[in-house]
Image (cartoon, rainbow over all chains, first blue to last red; front, side):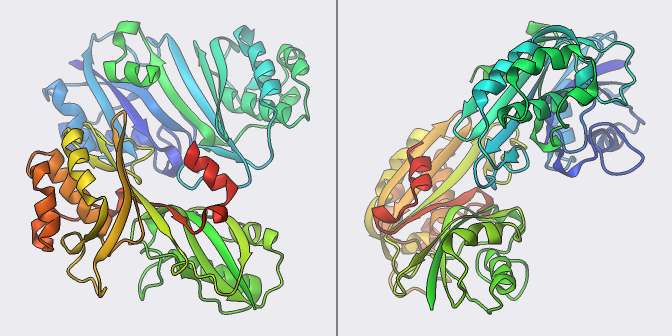
Length: 259
Length: 259
């Protein structure tokens, strides 16, 4: 039995999320369909986490067990030639059997992108939320700083969350402005259901001046979803990277991250 | 009678080109459909030029005549709210009746983008041609320099061209490398049918080492389509800008061009 680990990037626009659902096409469904063709085995892949319908991944990680003897350097090419063009396998490697894409993950980074200005950009419209009016990015940055650290993030998760603990640690949160686009990056040890999108919906209310940046600590401390802003639209969100050990990051991704 | 001039950006992926065709959706067709709804008039728009099926525009220009009294600052919003999201009107202004988007144009710029590397980028896959193997960009740049100036571009146009003269002037041609992407910009007083795509197909052969950069002058001088490389794929091509008088460039576009 082999344990194969892959990184995959996808444009989530056309999908009902990563995880197989009763209805609609999913990233997992497309990949498992191709794995069946390649190996003849009914393979179940395990992602580092789900992404919602319309959410993208620059570098999602998944693993699966197989008896197939396909050489590791052939997997990515073999899958990509059969996958739709909005899913691209970036790398494949063989791991110890105890490696688990979700349980072994140390840190994850998400990016949420907002374009301000009169009109969306046609070339990036599926990857940026378009916000017509200007946003006060200094207020947003100030509020954002309060999510760094270990907190109970109940305020910023869906009331449908089934997790026992809502305590997570955000190691880094930064807001980068590039022309008319505001990119917000979150790196943490785990993220609750809808957590980034609800934080971003709240930050946008702060950027609009409808919530004060100084209220962020009490909103977070309230552990009450009703104190937060609305959930931001899915299409602005991208799973940016999943980190295991530093030596595990493929060189090309490390270079992209530095670039 | 008013003469309204607009700039429009579009993702050409889903369209059979700018100009109305017997079959398939076109940019012109979509815009004229919305203009009929807005004005009640059967309006024919005139583009600065056609773009082929699958070719994009960052900033295409068109004009049309209308009796409508819609204030000039309302046109873009009114159209955008009814157009599909892969077509975005960027600006509208009223011009003298003798302004003509094609005849009054002084310079046009096209960009052709090539991504090299093992895999395409899912987020830009519709806007970059993916070339698996590395390309010798120094050889391509050297060959590219020979197209600058006034030349008969018969070698680099479709044999189906119906133009009387194939003499055009390229003011500027530059190749810019950004990580794994090669962007080639052409600015000229006009472009023949398929001209940029055939030059790019030839440059790729040069980048692959299959044609020598030093052969570019004789290939151009031959005035023979069979001496050039193949026509590059449409989706790497973007109409970047159309210039009239410098004072005519909307401020926002001038800023983007500087950025």
